[in-house]
Length: 104
Image (cartoon, rainbow, N blue to C red; front, side):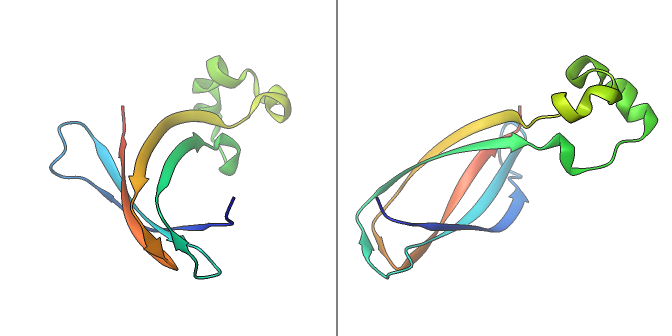
C-alpha cells in the first residue's frame, strides 16, 4: 500500500445543493512521484468536542451527550458525523479532488 499524503486546500459551502453541503478541496500527493491508477477514497469526518472551550451555559446543554462536566475527561470523545466516498481517477505525483459533504 502506498504512503499517500492528504491536505485540505479549501472548504466552501455549495450554493447550488438541495441540502446544506460543504465542498472540501483535497490535495492527494504520492511522495515518490509514482503513478496511481485509481483510488477509492472513503472519509469519515468526526466532531472533536474536546478541541474548544465551553461556557457554563453550553456545558449545561451538552449534559445529555457527555454527562456532567466533571466526567468530561472520560466522556468527551470524538463523535462520528458523516462518511463520504469518492473515486479518484489516475494521477502521477499529485492531484486535487472535490469531496461533497452533506450537512444533515
